[in-house]
Image (cartoon, rainbow over all chains, first blue to last red; front, side, top):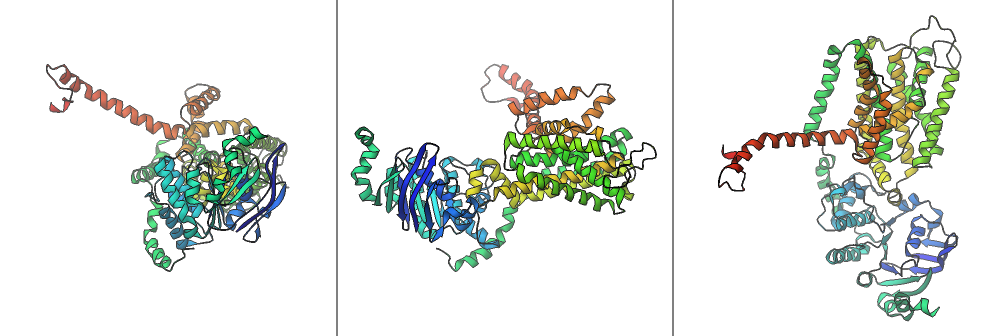
Amino acid sequence: MIEVENLTVRFGGVTSLDGVSLVFEKGTCGLIGPNGAGKTTFFNVLSGFARPSSGTVRAFGDDLLAMPHFRRARWGVRRTFQTEQAIEGLTVYDNVAMVHSPLRGAARRVDALAAIEFTGGGLSPYVRVGTLGAGQRRLVEVARAVAGRPRLILLDEPAAGLPDEETEHLASVIRAIPDHTGALTILVDHDMSLVSAVCETTAVLDFGKLIASGPTAAVLRDENVMRAYLGTAEVAL
Amino acid sequence: MTVTTSDSAAAAAEAGRRPLLRRPDKPVNVSVTTILVLFVLFGLPYVMNGYYTGYMTLVAIYAVVALGLGTLVGRVGLYSLGQGAVVQIGAWTGARLLFATAQPFPVVVVEAGLATMLIGILIGLPALRMRGLYLALITLMFAGAITVVLATINFPNGGGGFTGYNGSTVHIPPIRRPSIAASDPAYFRYAVVVAIIMFALVYAHLRTRPGKAWAAIRQSEPSALAAGINTTFYKLWAFALASFITGVAGAMLAGQEHYLYSINFATQDSIILLAVVLMGGVYTMWGAVIAALLQQLLPGWLQSLGVSYAWLTILFGVGVLQVITTAPAGIADQFPKDMKRLGRLLWRLARRPAAGGAAAAPGASAAPGGGAT
């Protein structure tokens, strides 16, 4: 469970997140919103790449903001990036095994190989990532995120630029993450069909403010959300 | 969580598969390298004259220096323009210890490496918070500062005190060499063996945890951070490793030269070093050997032909331009490719007359008929 209270992030004159308070309970949660709503900033705060000007983030009782970024990974925060960042020069196995893990020796190898197998797609652990296609690289990143006993997994638009059948496969993988790892998974995406297929609960950001949160189906029918996505909110202002 | 009891069984099964994770390099490469090393150790010293023995010893020493810089640039993405100064620190420390103590030569070499590593870490701590141009600038200024300091305190020549410099110009004792490698050919072999050990040290790093962390840092620092890699620590490690092997090379240089003069070291050597390392290729270890051949052997060869080696500065400038525009992986990567292309071209040329004859024959089909003859 992760509790965010009154989180505000400013970059110069721009307020990316404005007093956001929300709670993600468990399972797979969605975080959606139009471009520039502050979704990636929210992830950057959780993973330590952005410093909030005020607010607190407690994850399973621990104060996340007090840790430098590499410590958060050791605590159990995992994230993928909007632009895929699998390391080309390393094999699939090395890409996954590079993540911090409390496991050692053979158990660690088993864990990494299990993570690769979990993502399906028939990835061989011993091929270099540089030879893989975009969809497979995404899977490598997801495998890295589920390896090493994670507690909080942040997926930043994992399906961006993927064809439909690969998105479907990815959706089934993401849906299985909480059972496989026990980690709370947060998914940021523009793709409504992916979010509604995968997430039990969803929060919606718009211009740095939380405008709705709750069960996914109800949130997607919410009047404010529809307005934010159709763009009439700006007209009304 | 799916921490099931089958984990231990799977672990046992996995233990059997472990060698798969450490596939050896291509056997062809391994055998070629072995033959080359054996030739350099046991063949080359007999066919080289004294002139080239000296230059080839410098090649062996500077291959290690180039390897240190190549590792920083190619594996971690750190550009240092101060490696020439690091060589000087190693040479100074090595020379000072060789004069002041009666320790065995290899011990002094390792100590010089460690002392240089320590200084490298001290400089790296603040400098590594910068990247790219700023790191290059800081290291260049450091190189300039070291050159100035050493021009003032001079290299040790058997005097007392901390600096070990006595100011006299006559009866200067030479810096000693190991007793088993007093002659030039023997010292050449010694330098090659030291270089091989240093290459093995770097190779071991590249194949294990630090090498993988460096690969991650080079491509995407955010990704490395998100995976829990302490990027500052691993960058510092790379800096320490490069400083260590460069310090070792510096101490070897002290033994090779017998007498060290600060006038022989210039700040621009560091820049030339980066140029030849980029030309040689920073993504393979062969690149370091090529870089050392370019920097150390080429001037000697040109001199023996009566050509001024000042031309090399221009040649290296053009070479770096070429590397940046067409062959980012350097000669080590480009040369085999070009040779393959040349081989294919020659093969096609050799086959053409037969194929041409078949095509000219009346009623010949489009299928290659050259094989019929």
